[in-house]
Image 1 (tube, rainbow over the protein chains, first blue to last red):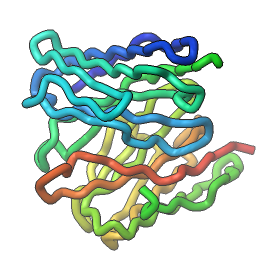
Image 2: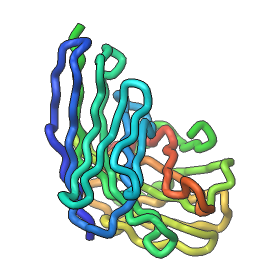
Image 3: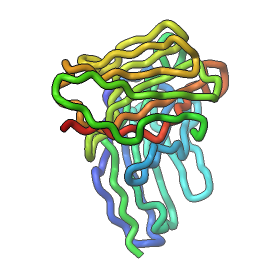
Length: 115
Length: 115
């Protein structure tokens, strides 16, 4: 089955700096890669996603890049703010009804933005 | 994700007891999922259902059971066979129609504790 590894497990940045989280996946058939943000005790919230026919996607201060050849994708947060402090999860899916749209999650990255 | 509700917010289980966690959605989504989250870890898939009256085991189904009698509801039973049930349980749903069908939206979660 799919295996997703996420690094680093914790990340501390100064407010205004950039944060980068990297994930690798094992199944070359995976074609959908969402990123979720989870604040303490709350539900995961989708912040951005990318499909395998796209190499990069940006939404304001957040961007995701995908390298299908190397089977890795990354989340970039620029101009970090204290409200960006949370746990971030990457995930991978083969999509489609046959695969059940199942998501395999990485282990998470705890981001702390210091004011 | 506001259209997915879970109850109760906290649940206490005694030894040898079966308990049922509720998950309801009004998003008209066909697919529903149950995940388990342990402290400081990622999400692991317990069961999923793509259509009413059908469901499949995920990666950690042992000690759990589900039913899908209605499109809106996907209850999870934690049986006495699950020896380490203390965790945060998250329900999610997604549409199986074309266009963003892989996107999963999460409920607020149920925290299960063993007495």
